[in-house]
Image (cartoon, one colour):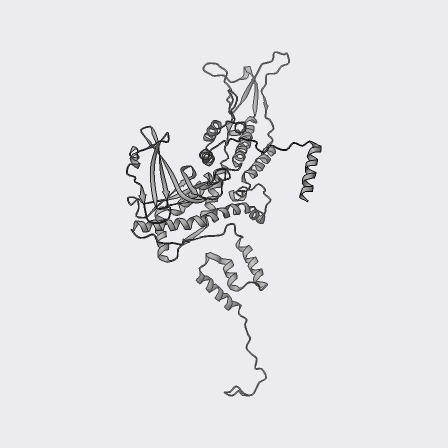
Length: 500
């Protein structure tokens, strides 16, 4: 049947005179940003400084799309545009990081000695705070990496640092990580240098480059003068990459929360807010006052000029007509408040779509939503939180194991094998009243045991001993009570064998 289909297709092409598409058409698409520039843009969104955002977008506006953005807009000569930033990007990243860290229950290893050792190292490095910052940095820039170093002058334990995506690079071979390269910038006598620390399996190498990318001696910078290449026993890298989402643009790199069009959404939201405030400013009460009634400088007699901000009065010419009246008139334009609110709510929804729920940020766009509707809105947050926790469930055990291996090397021991497990709690769980109602129904239907009811009600908030005592108490209270048998009407004596 295939030859019939080909024949019909050729016949249709011949009748309709359809020209086939060219197979080797060369299309050139220029990327507006490199990974480093894109990371810088996301960093500026997170910093939330309007002046910095305007400078960046004006300097990177090379095409019509970039020039059309609100933050790249250039006002006419003599006029100004008040540009306001919502601060939404930083709120998104910070709240997601806080949610994940708040639910981190703990990290455990095979035995108590290893767990205690990790607790000491964690306390020395302030691991929870470091992990929270790492999550935020990764959400903002797309990826990053933990670096484990040894400096006995600072601590007797391994030191854990986190480098964000713009300061780290990776080397892969057939999809497997081979090296992690960390960059640190130095300034010496008005000259800039960059240190590249290459962490591979069993080695650490140091190279110093000048501002032109030429390798120079490590002694050019006092902080790097004593650095020497290091080799150690063990088939592991003293670094752990962290990535939550995969970038579709750069191979082997992560995707930021602000990529995928969200940057333009934030730009539109800022434009709506700025336009809203500009309308409010322009809608101030204006006074039209004749020239002979304009306030004058008491010292020079000059007419006072209206302020560009308060716009208190506007000069009009005095009339010489016979019935003319010299009076002051006030006018206040109507502000379309409802239209601005609707635009703000719509753009805000677009900014948060697929990332986080408005309820998580304390934003209630619909005041009539009940508690159940609010919990339904949290699903977007749950999905994003789930992706973050899935990545952390792989990265944190790997980080703990490598840190303990490095500690073994510091003690001049062979690096051991360690297995760590991390536990996260629940988020946006239903209220206690709702749980009691659900569990009570299940118990009344006979489909849930008493032990399971207590577990569902109290979970990790009670110890196993407390829950066992509660189960025993409930069983004793709910045990069926039997009445003593009646002996009414039995006048005979009962002997020792129980017979009458």
